[in-house]
Length: 433
Ligand code: GLC
Image (cartoon, rainbow, N blue to C red; front, side):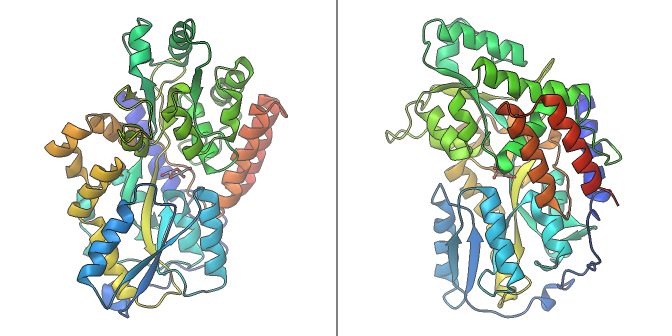
């Protein structure tokens, strides 16, 4: 990744955190209802941990370890739906009802501002975490107005999964760096295998589409927001980015079924041998390499940085942070449980079992992990250069507007120009101070 891209990523991170932090904030104060020391987080006893679907089973394993050592402070997993938007809805319903049901919340990195400003989660004591040992972009996603509300547990960066066996057989020596090179590689592979799809990502109308749309724009040299936080989707670069997806659907470079793909549908298609290229998060690496018969592509694929219009692409920053519900009991237990989950040991076991991106920097240099996951350095670069999504208090409206624009254009209901002009107007009003 170029130095320029890195600087741009860092600048946007700062902008997203500072300029948009107050977006839509209707008078909530900064305290988030928590304390500045763990003393303010009181109460010990059983707690519930609300989290998206545990596709690996490792989360339950770690919880079992905790429970064995803490018989009076047991943690029970409450498994929420697979899709990010549905998880958010359930957590918000719970918070609005001021329910005690959820104690620890596994928050997507884009929800911090909304949950903190609404005082649905408590402030956490920064000095009790060794935050200097974590990837900085990941730490920043847990902050709102310089205070910490959520602790980074795992990060996410987009990667290009590609069928190395098929590229080799077609005489394509290197994974593509640009969209044109990707199309050329597909044409060569499809010459002898017409049924296989070229490329898919997460294109169903949900948070994953916001991610893939942003990445397309960034990978064409544009951005959703400029360096001062102003929306910039009415630009040639944004049009080029969205057109990559729109034209891809039209030309069938993207198989039509991919408009219904979230992470798991796409993973199943890739594992079933239906795709040459797949934009996906790191968690797919371990599952697609499983040798228990669940994957037809184990040992046949590798990962590379995302391709872009004229040079390698720029990922959107993903990941998950743990927070404590403002309405929960036993907050002292919750804080200890987060520390346990965030420890180097727990994160390492999680990487080994799930191939998810750790947030502790040292794990990217861990010899055992590097041996099993040689792409960890590509992943670290992807994350350090990744661009965060807008950190808006009204994030639900921001992401809905982005999904609407991308989905409308990809399904041919709206032209790219109209979709982006409308999105520009919506984002301007949503991000106005
Ligand atoms: C992953 C990412 C998250 C993103 C989601 C979209 O879970 O970690 O940040 O919002 O995918 O589907």
